[in-house]
Image 1 (tube, one colour):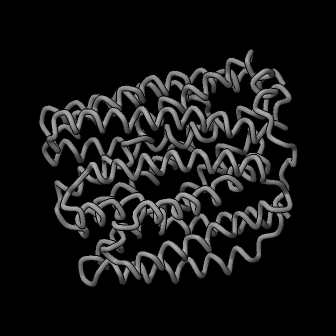
Image 2 (tube, one colour; image 1 turned 180 degrees about the horizontal axis):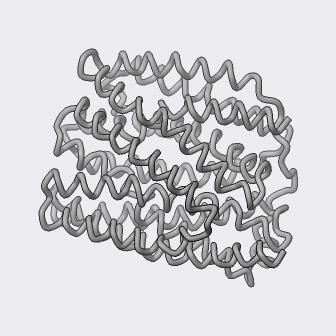
Length: 398
């Protein structure tokens, strides 16, 4: 049954990426144009989304079990359709109901992510985790290649509303596929953070991977996810150009993940994580001193090559870390703990952007903020390397 579920989960992840790309790339651009480039407006509802998402994830991990996990997973796609309907109905007036919309948006994302994380941990061992996630990322990135340029074309030649209709139809197809998924098999133990923290307090590899996720959320996975698309769009000016370049970056990501699969088997990739982060950081400094399109392009290329390798490996490592030292039964507690670290990291990231932007009140400060945030990626990779060293030694000893 798990094998069947994994097949449909992979297909759904492939299709769902279409909506994910829209919300990660184009939604903020859509809102930015409506509110006349008011970046504060975007920062405020994004921080709200982070807080609501953290609360929802805690509740979800408290109540989820084998009986309701499949239902919760499927409900995420019903909520996705509801979000699309609201966008179609309200159009530009969606900004008046932005907090209601973002609440539903966070619910659809959380209802998807929590069952997904639990089934990924449960259906893979340490040996297969990295390759499975790398393959899944490649599958998702096939959609990521086509979606940006297609979305940009539809928006420029027709309208955002036509794109919303297409997203809605695609989500209905996902609902049909999701109906074929059987109940997930997950540990039904009640989440008890206090017991887990007591057992994990001497596990240095867990502390290291939590710190890695914390610093990643300050840097590449925090405010950067909102900043980068905005900065690039402001340089390019049109959705079609913006989508075309993001298609290029998606191709670079797929090539990088293929390279990751090759070097992963040789156990040499972990040595280079900090150097990859340093290269990204140096390129961000060039953006600060010469914010031309060429320097921004180089930075984007490094983020979608070295950055995607770091992201993929840190995700597989955080899932694999709980499978050592007889702690696998504490999957929920593990997920909640690294989400606490990520939540704090995100708040620091957005707070820093908000303070700097409002103090200088200049859009150019965004480039400087990118360089500041990317410094923390170097720290994240150091902790990632430490964790992988421990897991490698653990595998060889056993």
